[in-house]
Image (cartoon, rainbow, N blue to C red; front, top):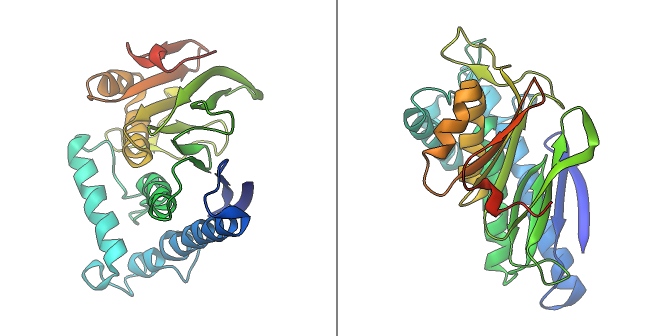
Length: 252
């Protein structure tokens, strides 16, 4: 089973090649995953006036009185800010809170836990290009993930294999500038075009990909120094650079 739905303003794909319990069980767990993503959108979307994060930004709700999920995300955001020496910061140039740089990977990881709890060990969850694969694909092999050419999205500049690791890509070629450099007057981070990070899971890969992108070219060195992480960076000059161990994942 492979199905894509538009949730959180982006395509969310769930693929389950080998379904324990038959087709009904597969579709039921897929529906549960999509329902979970919708609940995350309702709570964390800065575009929805009815969301909890919007209520916090309007000061109609204090963080202390927020839901446990919101408190967890705000706590994780603060921890990530400290671990990245301030390069990950959910405070926007307008002074509001936008935890989307962490929420997407966190939500994908939680969705993966729903599948695992239901006994599914082979699956692939993709939300807007950030991916949590697990187990094997329909051919019994590790999942293959393409890294898009920022100037030609129909072309893959690299194809990697992963099973269990999370793969997150931060870039400006789809949404335009949307990651800000908190060390440079909160101006858009535009020194690089694309940064793909492979980490122990998608939550870890996503939050550090966001921070490393804000660092510009020196973000690759930041990832290099993180145990268990590798990265592939593309600059505006169309020159790609990778960490020393990234080639371990490359198949094309």
